[in-house]
Image (cartoon, rainbow, N blue to C red; front, top):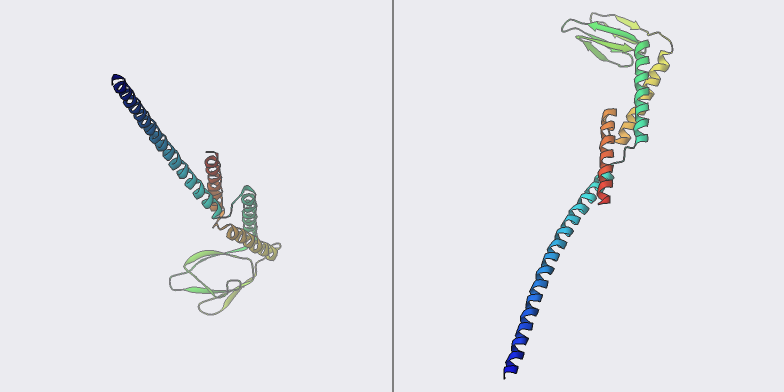
Length: 193
């Protein structure tokens, strides 16, 4: 019977050792599962951030260096055409007393001049005087009409390019290009993780 008792104790000891090993294994498995859950959560957060960056990048057309350089050239061409036009156009400065105006007929048909200001005239213009009478101003200068047309075309090309890129002006395009570069860098970094 001692032997039987010894076998029973041995069996209990083995069962207890097996139970402790199972508990230890269970605790280790739970800890590994928690670590895996944390890794999975971090991976999901990184994936969501990457997806958000990709969506942000895809949401608007890229404003690459070539497009920005082209826009800079168009802006410079418009500025040059403006300067040439202003240099050659006839400058009309006016200062009118309160309540008096002069009607301008020409390129800006029917505009009323009031108060004080300045206009650049690059086309024949008539000023209708308040008490009657009119003044006709015919700007001179070399190729004024072609300069005015080139100014208009340069302005239109610039406006078209700005509209295509969805920006109001060159400064906004520069800012967007910088933001695009930052976004690309963030996207590349997120894809490496």
